[in-house]
Amino acid sequence: MKKTLIALALTAGATFNALAQDIVDTAVKAGNFKTLVAAVQAAGLVDTLKGPGPFTVFAPTDEAFAKIPKATLDGLLADKAALTKVLTYHVVPGKVMAKDVTAGKVKTVQGQELTVATSGGVMVDQSKVIATDVAASNGVIHAIDTVLMPK
Image (cartoon, rainbow, N blue to C red; front, top):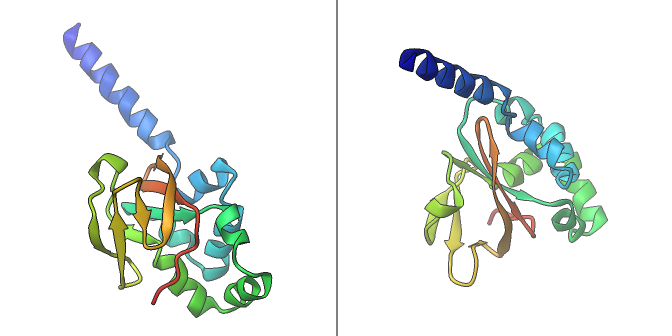
């Protein structure tokens, strides 16, 4: 009986993991990352963010994108290379949950470093983390209130 319960528990866990959504699907489902998802599609990064990862994504909300002047945002969306540079600046290799965040520098997929501060809430460069630990099958999303621009 004990072996059956363990097998059942392992099977249930495997089923749950198989049903978990990847970063892109999780962002779509959240509903407040529509501009980010459109940008990821425009940059051709959907397959990457649906890949095995794991990734930690500092995801600007729609309100964060709304802070960018329309002409600037339209120009960015039209320039695939620049858009890819900006979007990959929001992604860190590995799955870093909020409880594991420490202050300091962290290298992005884009290649430059983000500065993380933890006093008075978590800040990533000049952006405040406003929601944490949105789990996905291939990583985690932390919502931020400002679009990060590489140096």
